Length: 141
Image (tube, rainbow, N blue to C red; front, side, top):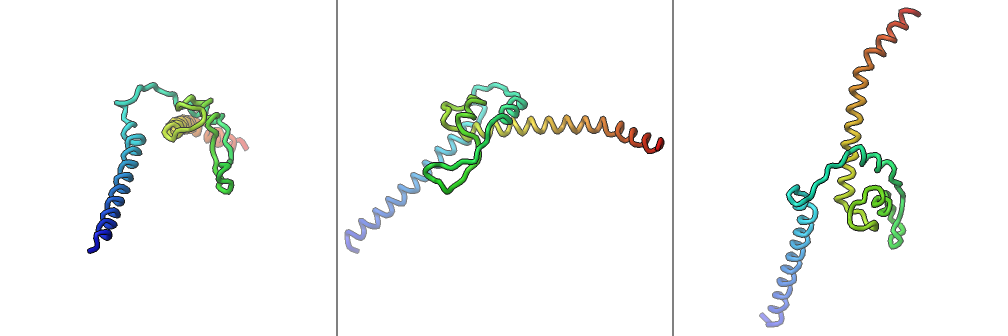
């Protein structure tokens, strides 16, 4: 085997291991950012009323927009400044962190669930009254 061929093969192997190492590093960083730090042991907690999040979310303007550098790719959603003004989350009014967007969505879903459950209970209470009134009207007609 020619010495330069051996060096070339070694170079490809080293480059492949470098790419694998880089990919592993990226996965580790993503894991640390989005998975491991969701643990309550690494957070200072404050309870949020889900209804409050729902009310703030309901007042958040939603836009259809495109990045200036990608004029053919449409997106939809709030602007970072509006999100920050409503929720005060993250470290800048110029970006929306995905963890904050997900947290707001969870809180709003909980509030919607609570409202639907309350309406369901109210319907169960009112339905017999409504049926009784309809039966009385049918008799008197």
